Length: 478
Image (cartoon, rainbow, N blue to C red; front, side):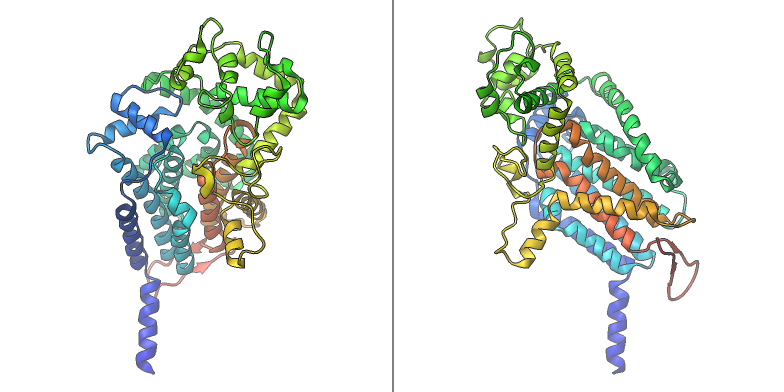
């Protein structure tokens, strides 16, 4: 009997030990690297690697990833170095948070955090070499380095502040719309007490994010010397076509641009703008709207040449005028696209007004329409991996955390608020800026929400003991 009790005590001590969790996290990092090296690239990342090799960047994709890749090529060619960077940040983030939770006397929450890292949709997304993954893993690692000290109510060393700042800067620059999600994390970096007024942080996040857009452009063009190619034209053409689809007003395209109702109806889908792109089946939308009318024989241009061709400077004014003339139809178009972004109501056909899933091969790993005949476990899994579910959890979590009566503003509440506000702001920005649907676009939002959920329900606001042979902690409710 005594031997059994001793064995149970030993097992409990091992499984709750921060060292054990750190070892498991390290082994998972190695397994992730070995099992999927050198990662999986797609057309976007392949084009960025081409720029890295040539050291000649453009801003169709944010050039910071191609620039970093050009540095990594000093170590080795190919996808390997970038894949290692992403995987290291991923497991460093989850590992630091898990060990910090364990040290705070919350071993179950620590293992829960490891479980979030092992969640199959996250783990499989992490093997892809994408700017969306770069955003998520650098934001996560930056937050985790700060959380390690914040949860113990300690001031983070200067070197940690610098490292977190660099990671946040990279994550902000690697996706154009990342500016909407970084502001709460900056508040957590500078002074977590700001997060005690979450509604105020939310209100200030939008104007701060807008101000960061020209700063990002200046960095891309003046520091990285990236050639501007006007990717905003994709959003403008997508929105104008959506407005024309819902309103039936073809004059939104401007004088001299002759489109028919049949062309708009057959080419527009709220799921994505790709039909209208230089590589799409309805490329004539791009040719007529995005490219300068002084350029002749645009139909003969390759997709890449069409992307970098001289722009039509009247496009922006037509875009703004179409929104002003048809605000409700613009809202219908944007809401239909947002429903597809978060996979609301599962997967629907591209022709439906309210779309729920992408058509692309890449996105088919995402959520699909639930089938009632499936086992309850499969149905639950489909729900858990749906961005719409993550969004609902994030909204509920924000309301609960914001309304919590905690005069001491525990560290766990501040950390969870930083993550959940970043998640919600990043997701909701797709109400305005999204042009395509893919599960990867919601990767950071889902990672941040799940991480915030584990932190918030763990009660990490603990008064850490200074000395004790058997470490215990007294926790305050959030």
